[in-house]
Length: 133
Image (tube, rainbow, N blue to C red; front, side):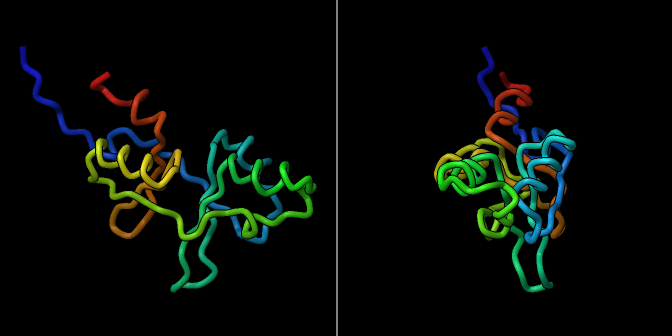
């Protein structure tokens, strides 16, 4: 029985769709975009060249809008996002992607190649899109 593992990279298992949003958008606008685009995370655009990207996920809306009992119209994305967004290299081994996400407590991260974000990888992708399962 051959038990040698086949290499799979972040790029092999990622979702190609990536959606950007401005940090000044409201939480309500962000959720509307997420519904329309059928995504679970948005990348928050840089304000200037030296700035970092941010990320906003469903968990952030729970923590920053619902629990503090605010309305989605009074909260801006920049107030609840995580910044800088932790990204993974497109060529990173899927095992290391899983290890990184678990260690930092994230469910997903943008995938970067040649200085550009090309997709998103999630813990679900690592299982459901993984040909080894």
